[in-house]
Length: 419
Length: 201
Image (cartoon, rainbow over all chains, first blue to last red; front, side, top):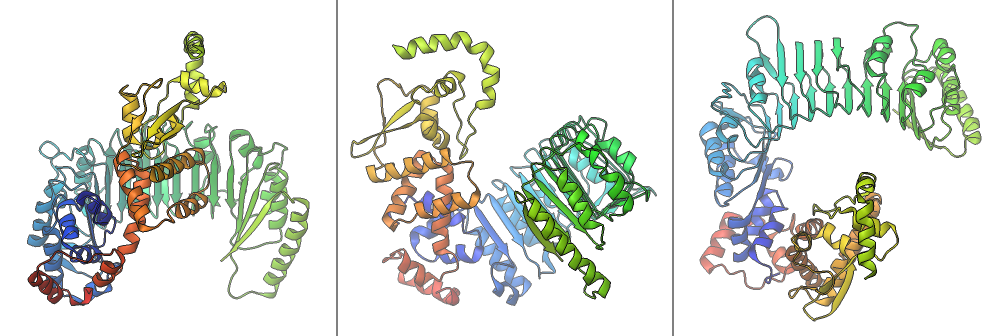
């Protein structure tokens, strides 16, 4: 070990990440101390790493962090994620960031600062590539004066920012590829809250817990879009049809538009949503490259609407994974299984119920017939705590019919997941 | 001679075949760049012996290994071949700081990862764990070799292993594990450390 050059030791100790371990390493011997001082590139202060952080007062913790950071030089990744700390003082945080900003590439910070520190302004203009910020606020974005030339990934959680500043911020990041917004506090100047983001480099967008009137995303290169737990009146994606992965989970949106050209869609995942089938069908029917389709816990606007297998088979010949969970009624069974086209490439089939009924096993059977190359079948079931006699009977009958069914489909691997 | 005739024939075919072959280009593993000239790929497809390169250990032992394997993993070797300083017909790459035992292991690692890169994660991890089942001297030799040849994924693997030996331990324990007999601090410095962080010892 003493033969190793000090830079190599620095690389090894950088993999430790946790500040506690780094401090221990630097007290182990002179060579390791030197490695920590000159060649450490990653440092992390996380309340998960060391339970004793909780016993320290905030000012003692600030001193500890300051001492540790100031002993390093050339730090590239800094992570300060403290769950139990109410706030750090602005002057201390400014000191940490000014000391490291020349070389810092990744910053993860989730503690409120008082008074507020504009973290992005402070260190975004240097080498910063990844910024994960929480519980802070961003204001006064001026793209003419401030650009964040290296920023590739931006994640804002519980951050207050005005709609205008958010719009300007994205345009001030010429290389941004990933954007994540979680529960932002968007201040608006007029009655209608509109967020309009425009970026030709954005590839991945994740939005959670946002409530807006209008959300317009203009992204010519976007590949992955994921909305979760949002309430929107209008969501519009303007692009060049590059979207590959589209996922919405527990979203209420009145008008949803992901563009005309959807040929590159490979994964569509819709859950906890009310689908207007004709509209939805129109949206994705041209996605002949679709490989995975998941419609989970969905309801149909029109009670008579069904997901019919014939449509899925003809529109999506490349489909390899199909996941369906909705209330199976007589209509679904009869009309949904009409036709004879097979889902030739489906290898994994996931079917689920929220309230079991006696039709479910017939539905499973009907779908199994249409997937000649199936390898794996996964049944998801919700079993209520207070089971009535009738429910127990239905469950028992289901189990019996599944066993009989799987005897005929020996090439399929069944799995059951109950919750 | 044989090789030259084949090359001429391929050059004639090249325009029409190039597009089809672009789908056959080897994917890089470990971040190193990869040679994608179709004539080499076509050679491989035709069953001609895969291009080999010679590596020479510090003990002057020669190891012959598929060029594609080393080029995928080692940035240093890839650069040497890209900039043409390696002449296939006559030269060998001298690696004076890597002994035969270590070089053989490094070649093993690169070869396995190239040929098995489609295996599932668990199998690969199990193989890696078995691969690193060596004594500490062997581990450091591997680390130095991977560092010199700039083999990113092997380096990360070894860093991870050594880091796990340090993580969560106290200072006296670490000194024992890594056989650090002389910590190099002055008695005053050592006392100061012990006073400041008594629970770390």
